[in-house]
Image (tube, rainbow, N blue to C red; front, side, top):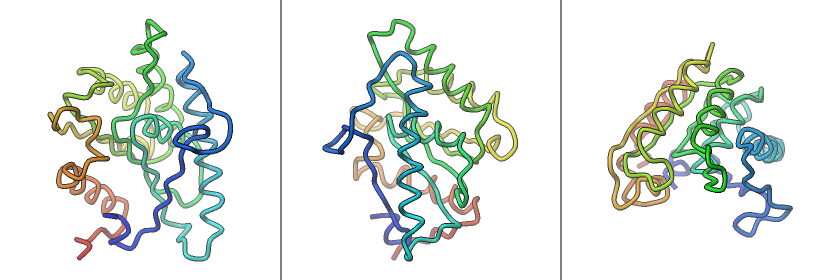
Length: 199
């Protein structure tokens, strides 16, 4: 709603086989990097459909993802897609406790995405995230930032501290809006996009 009231078209695709979405579910294997890239293919498909709609400005696109969607968004950032200006990662990652080294794999995955990333990015994480315990978010971001070049080097991470019982819920909770909205607004403006108060 915060984006709609500011004049943006919003589409909320769900990954295949998740949240009643059709298609086969792509499981969370230990190969986190490939999983994110496979999910990103569906983001491309969603964008291909949306840019064909007459009410969509195909020159001003921002991709935003939360949790597994945040990982997918950063995987998508390695794809050259016309009109995409930036990406936002809310508490992104993929946790698979059956893989004993899942944290190191996650760090390596973001580092590898950084090598081919193409867009400025905003990362938003909190200190009491039930999925990504500190200092994991910092390590993921630093691995990405160390490899990012060109526009992708314009990556910024925001630590919102503790949020309620679980900062992983920041983006989905109404109470989180006053925390993340100013940061996202500033990011949009840095991309040359309008982001007024929506009133």
